[in-house]
Length: 446
Image 1 (tube, rainbow, N blue to C red):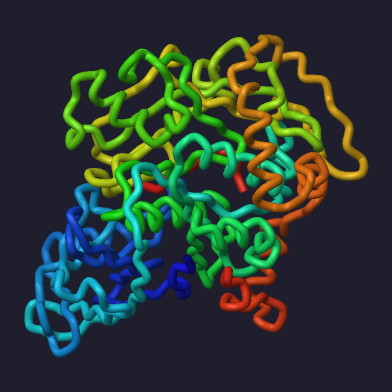
Image 2 (image 1 turned 90 degrees about the vertical axis):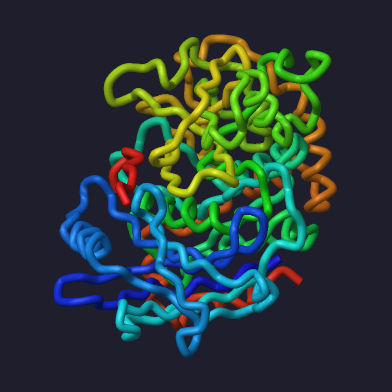
């Protein structure tokens, strides 16, 4: 299913030196609430906060209202708990409308600005869904260690593994300048109804900013359509259960990604509505060869990535409770309560090169030694044949040939994508694709 195209960010002036920039407008209707979310431009920790501080001060002392045309169903604009997003409550009777016009007004009824939203909701509800961020070639020289290559190869095997084990639906994200390269991968999943695509007609040049675009937009598209969401699980990270004791009968079901989260909450005697996120850890595994799945690799480091010290230490990944979380970022949700699951229950295999080495898939491929991955772990080996079979069925191509070919397929670099996003003459039409910086993962503060 094709989600609406997201236009370029829109900025409105509220008063001198006070502006509001919205990157996406997402309507949602159902048990989670009937409202339209105005998603603000992320501000990273390292960026200048004067503009966002000015807007926050304005909101604290100046009531702002939202309404439809001619001030219909005018209500006070709400703020998310962490003061990140803006919510405009909307009549549930308009849930089937395909387009909305939202007007922001001051207390006297003066129109301060206007935003538009298109509405193509999912036709089903799901247990667990996942966000799939844009695929790009990282050319930053500071990222030469613990890197990845062959991202299209990684994407298809990751999609099949996760779908097989319980991810019901994927939200593909593309940005202007990146969509053409990803078409081959996205099309069969969209045709099969396994995925939807969300396309931004804007290309933020900073990797982490794009990631925040995806996380924020994806959560609100999942509202009223899913119970749990994988917002930031990368295509080289595979979640698997290390024990079945949290499940009835003590056996891990094949579709564990569909039911594990509620089982973890119940096992910990917690209330679902009080747990916004579930966090877990990762082991780094050596990469697999070009013509094989990464989960063919059975060698990992002895310790968890999160157990490292200094710059090489990693932060946990997480799943988010769609019903009760509102302000997500890369490694959690703001002002939220969470459960932390240790490796005796669940862990993620992270197939990435060791620090200081790089494996380039392509004609000049060579498997570099990975001495740090010296612990044998065959936990996912049993899924190899099933994933290969699924790839064969999806793409009608020998999986070994497919993986080798996709490993050599090169996505645009960030610099190339940024240029394409500005070059309207060369940029691929959005409608033509319808189916049928720094190495630190810097958080946004608002």
